[in-house]
Image (cartoon, rainbow, N blue to C red; front, side, top):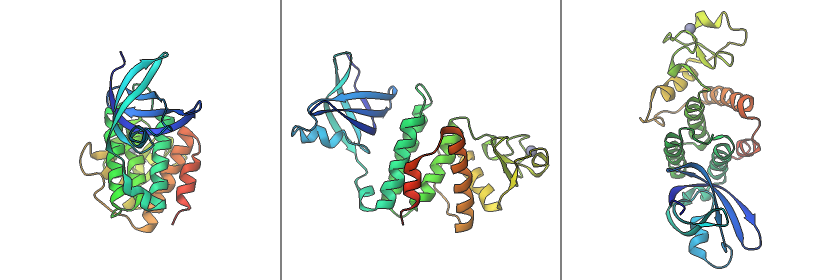
Length: 243
Ligand SMILES: [Zn+2]
């Protein structure tokens, strides 16, 4: 018996004539692949709950070796993302990133709520989608153990940070920066943005805005980090071109 799961659809692949496979980030078992049969044959309720961006409850049965969706109940589909191509594109990048990089057995119990929260913020439209993406990235890289320091110097723990180093894996203080060949000075607002998000566990990480200059710097650092750790993402480059 396959266990029923609740989760967010990250991706879908067509299989056979009328079926598809979906990749779901689930509450119960992290990233899981589910088969949806007959999804194109007028079972519109099943179709509506098994597309990317759908957060649904999936009732499963064991079919031919892997779990198939018998019935799905849509809980949230972030419908308003579709009203704005920029928001939709950044949302698409987040699904793509998580689908390709979330590790089996990683702390999905933190990644799923973070992703749902970010999509909800983006959907409202009152918060810029590109900044919401950067805030997500800071937290996601931190949860992956790729961004250290918890808002302080990644090397020595000093609170006053003035630079960023990929070798150290995050923010660094002026003194540690001297010993790190790749350390680059950053704007005070950039340091504050990283610290703000890294320090907060489940608090209000979407509680600030940034100047254009600081946001460009934050985004540039995060993009380099993502490229270094996971490789390039065309979905992000596509979103960046949207205005
Ligand atoms: Zn230091």
